[in-house]
Amino acid sequence: MLPLKDDIPSYKKPVVTTLLIGMNVLVFLYQFSLGPGVEGFVLKYGAIPYKITHLAKVAHYTTFPLPLTLFTAMFLHGGFLHLLGNMLYLWIFGDNVEDRLGRFKFILLYLISGLAASFSHILTSPKSTVPMIGASGAIAGVLGAYMVAFPYARILTVVFFGFFARIIRVPAFFVLGFWFILQLIYAIPSLGVQNAGGVAFFAHIGGFLAGILLFYVLR
Image (tube, rainbow, N blue to C red):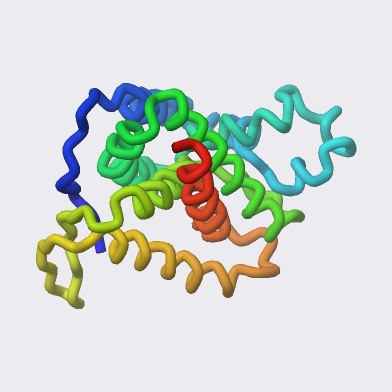
């Protein structure tokens, strides 16, 4: 399923959501401009589980504070489709959560969900040396908050049936609940695999659950 838009109007301009999208796009454009140097950039500013869990042992080898990579990693992306998918979800669901919580609390939810996502991945892959990058963990927190805030919102969604597709309106709790179940299904086989690349599914799970909890706390 691919969500396209929801039917919940925003009563205020989604300033924070727009700024977050702008920051992610600008950082990606900078990454793209680096050419072959992008690999070193990602290694420096991405969150590497092994370095985080062995902070004292490797800190003297780095030129950037390792704890800060938990934040900088949220604004890095591995490719255009990675960025596009994340920003689509943030644009669809972020404005309404920002509207409900207010701008400052929305920033808190976004960043804390991102940290929860990072720690969820680190706890399940503490020895991984693959950089963890992307806004998807933080955005998963936004999805969790949206699901409990607007469970019956209608989401215009592309549903694929093999080679065929149909656009229908689906309740938010079904779209986002289905998304979360998929993360669980894909995450289980990755347990114990330390250096596999690809999607950090446990980060999505941690961010989503953190977003649900934070929404109840912050509202």
